[in-house]
Length: 271
Image (cartoon, rainbow, N blue to C red; front, top):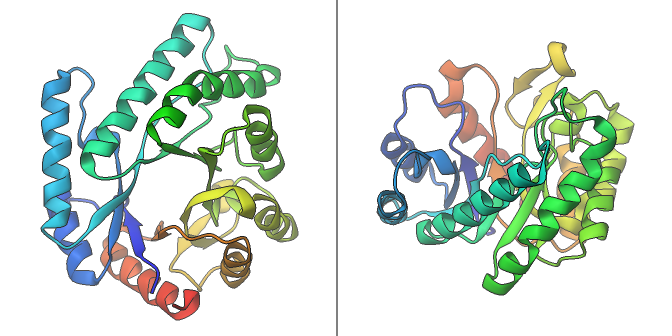
C-alpha cells in the first residue's frame, strides 16, 4: 500500500506533538508541516536546526516521517534584492526540511500585491526558481509548486513555468480542490488534472463545493470534485509519492474529517 499522509492544518488547539500523536494513532505514515513549526525567523539557525532534528525524532516516535515542508515563500517581489532574500530563505528551508527528514518542499509562486503588476508574475516566478535551481539540483531537493491562492491556480501557467525553468527537481503540488476554489468550472478542473499529472511531485487530496466566497470544505468523496479521476490520471502518469489528505471542513470535526479522508484514500488508491 502506498504511504498516506496528512497536513498539519485545521487542527485548532493541537500542538505539533499532539498532532503527531493523533496522526500516528489514526494510521497515517507521513505528515507535512510548515517551516514555522521548526523555525521562527527571528531565532538563530542553530536553534532551528536543533528543532528540526527534534521534529524528525518526534514523528519517528509515532512511526511516521515527514513527506514535505511548506515554505511560505514569495517570489513576487518589487526588486532584485528582495527576490534574492527569498531565494536565500528558500535554501534555508530546504536545509531544515532535510534535517527534519524530507527533501520535498512545497512552495508558492507568491502573494498577489498591488505593487507587483500581474504581467510581471511569470517572469518573477521563473527568475526565483532559476536562482534556486543550481542549489536544489546539486543537493537533490524537490520543489513542489502549489496551485494555491490566485497566482498559480492555473495548470497551464504552472506547466509554462516548469518548461521555462527546465529542472527535473521542480514540479507541482496538486491540490485537488484548489483549481475549483479559484473559480474554474468542473470541466476545466478535470482537464487541469490531465495537464498537470506528469509534473506532480506531491499531492493534497481535498474536497468541497463551490468557489471563493461560496466554497465549503467537505470530507473526501462528499463534495463535487471528481477525486477518482484525479487518482486515475496520477497513477497513469506514474505518480509514486505520498497521498496526502487535507480537510477544510468545520474545525470541530477535524480529527474525524482526516480519518474519513484516510479511509477514502485507502479504498481508492489500491496497493
